Image (tube, rainbow, N blue to C red; front, side, top):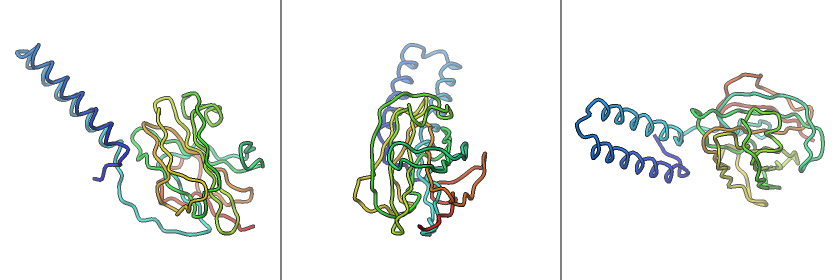
Length: 221
């Protein structure tokens, strides 16, 4: 299993915490065997949870200029028409994917093209399914324009547990469909804003895979 580079520091801190905790137990309670074994079990569980959170499985991305692929693993929690007021300033179809702590948290480019816009917004840490999390939580906004001139806007949104968003997007750089554009630590969601008339290929409550599931089918201008 490959571990994502964003997990190296967290895993090292987890190992240090486990080492210190077990050393203290052995020093102060050397004869309480049952308690020592409980600490062993809890330490192993903690390490396994942190390790699986930062896993980065290899996937095969099937690129298609007409497709919008899912940017994250998780569950579809929103499909609705809404107003996008930050950059596009028009009506859009919003598709949101909620990422639980057990999902892979690598975020991938939904389309190929040029990064036209990137902005980080500090904010709150409301639960990711809260209606106001898209506009009030800590988040990043990214826009890719494909070669047909169609713009797709998407946001990484921090949740109640997610306290660090990592985004690699740079304005003017090339974006390749399916390649990593970021990572969100410990659960959250990704919103995708698509042009009206886009054919949505997923349903509410559907489980999706980042870089694999086709989220929608674009229509050219």
